[in-house]
Figure 1 (cartoon, rainbow, N blue to C red):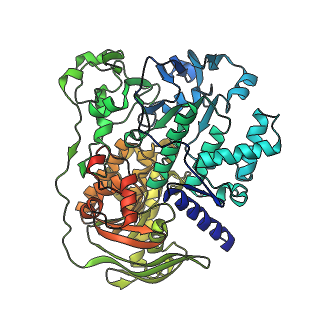
Figure 2 (figure 1 turned 45 degrees about the vertical axis):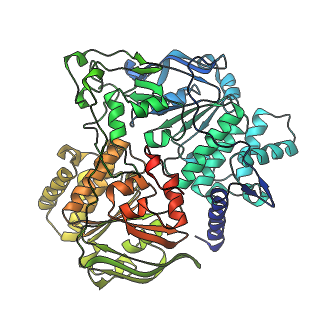
Figure 3 (figure 1 turned 120 degrees about the horizontal axis):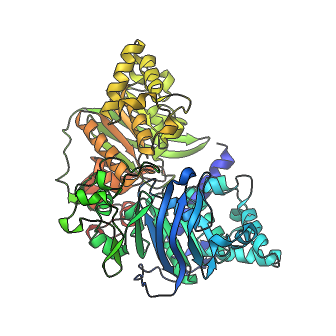
Length: 638
C-alpha cells in the first residue's frame, strides 16, 4: 500500500471514530445533531395500514422445484421486519423478490407483492426501473459488489438522483447528497465525498450504501445481511442509523439475517424461515421470551452471548436443499420432538396474539434449551508456547502496531479483539510470517522466530498454521479436497501418497466431515464444510499453534456453534489458538484470555470472564456495551 493510500485509510478510521465517540456527528467545521433520538423497536401492530403486503409468494427452479413457497406477511410504515434462518432457508430469495428479481435459474411463479398499492410483480422492465431505488431500495451484504470501484462516491449518488429526478439541478443534487450524508453519519467534506470506495473503511462503505438507498426517500428498504462483516461498534452505529431513518421518514424495512442476536437490536417483528417455508412468525419480544417452534429454539440455543458463557448447542444435521425436501415437516429429521404426525406437513397457525407457528408438537416442551456453562476453564500455568515482545508493525512508513507484548500458554485460546483497523489481523499475520514490515521479538517454544516464514527453520514452519476468514478464497477451487490435504502432508512430511491419503481421511473424520468429501471440489461444499476443510488442512500439518482470523463471522449460528465446539475439543487435546474476532459473544464462548487492541496499541488484557464482566478501559467498556446480547441487564454500563 502506498503512503498516500495509508494516510487515506487513517483518515477513514478517524472519521469513523468521530462519529462513534461523540453524540454529535462532526461535519466539516460545524456539527449536525441527530434529527431524532434512537428509540427501541415499536410494538408491531397487525391492524395498521400495510405498506408492504406479500401473499402466497412462490419461487421455483427448473422442473417445478420450489425454493420458497406459501410466503405471506405484512408490514406497516416505520416498522422493521426480520427474516431469519440458516443459509438456504430462502431469506435472500424473498428479499430479491421484493424488487421483482429472481437469481439465475429461478422464477417467481406465484403470489402477489404490493408496495403502497402497487403490484410489483405485474410491472414490466420500464416500470421496474422506475420503482427500484425510488419506491423500493436495496442494501447488499458486501459493498464491494455494489459500489463501482472506478467511480467516486459522489458520482454514484449524482448518477442515481439524475436517473430518477432529472429535473434537479447539480446544486440541488449536491444539497440532497449533503443532507443524506448527514442522515447516515458520514462527513460532508468535499474531500471525503470525492473519494473512491476503496479509500473508505468497511463501515463507511456500508453507510454509503445506506445513503444510496435513502437518498430517493423510498417507501420500502430491503437490507440483506448489511452488518455481517462489521465490528461491533460500527455494526451498532449502522443498526441505529437504519432505525433512526425508518422512524424519521416512515420507511418500512425488511432486514435479512442469520443472527438473531443482531436482529433483536433492530426489528419489530420476526419471520423465521426453514427450507423455504415460514415456521414461526411473531413480534420480537415474543420470539425471545417464548420461542415456540423447535427450529427457533435451536437458533437461540446456538447463539454465543457476551453476557454469559453458554453451552452452545449446534442443531444436528443440515437443512435440505431444494428438490431434497422430505415429505411432511422439513425440520423433522433434525428435531428431537419428531413424531409420526410429522410425516404430514404442519400448517402455520395462530398460537397466541400475533404469534404463529408451524409445528405439531409445541405442547411437548422445548426441543433446545439455552443453558449457562459452568465456570471458565482454567489453563494450567506453565511455560509459554508463544511470547510476543514489543511487536511493532508498519505499512510503508506508517506504524500501525505499537509495542504489543503478550504470551500464550500451551492449550490456551487467546482472543485478539478490537474494531476494524485496530491491528488484530496485522499482529496475526506477523506471527504467521506473512505480514508487512515488523520489528520486535517473537519466541515460539523458547526459540526466537524470524518475521518472514521462509526464513524460519523447516521443522517449525508447519507448527504455526493460519486459517483465513474466507475459506473459499483460501482453498484452491481447481483442487479437490483430498488433493488440498494430501499436498500439504507431502510438502511438510515427504509421505507417500497412500500414507498421506490415510492421514487426510482421518483428519476429515476428526473435523466431522464424511470421507466421501475427499473427492469433492470446494464449490460443492457449504460454507461450514469449507471452513472445516480449511481447519483440516491446518490440522494435517500437526500444528502447535492455530491462528484463526475471523473464521466464524460469515457462518450461520448453528454452523458457528459446530466450529466453536470443534475448536474447544482440539484445545482440550493441547492445541493452542490465537483467535482474531470482533464478536465478543464468540470470545466469551471460546477464549480463555483476551487482548484488547485500539489504534494498534494494547489497552487491556486479562482472563476472559474478568475482562468482559469488569472492563477497566473506556474503550473496552464501549466494545462490551455495543455488543448484541439477549441479557443486556447483565453487562456493565459503558
